[in-house]
Length: 157
Image (cartoon, rainbow, N blue to C red; front, side, top):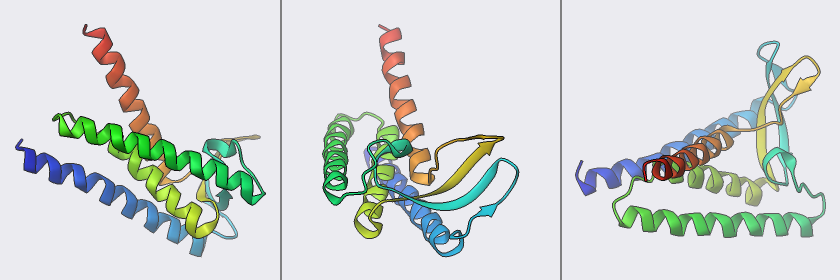
């Protein structure tokens, strides 16, 4: 694959991820306010997460929210720098782009909605997984792939 083809493919990942995430969040904001049960274990409801994953460091006060949001911005910027360096040296960066795309879309929520829009809820009996969204799925897949890549490189030494 030529460098130009790889660049277009790499650029398409964030565009697709952010578009799907924004569309699904818009649909959740307009149609899931009262909740909607799709099956005995999957439902759609609406929550605004002012913390990070699983509501950790969630703050009701604006100062705490600002601190968490600032840390997310710094981490995202650091990952963007790392990703650019990998891209510049010809490495595959699809996993990093999944994480960056999800992070950027969730940051948009923080600015426009005062918290990350979460709407997917998986539960079984009395147990329920913390609510999440499409961007969160992309972040988890991207981080998993990045960790796998590191272990694969270490294993092959």
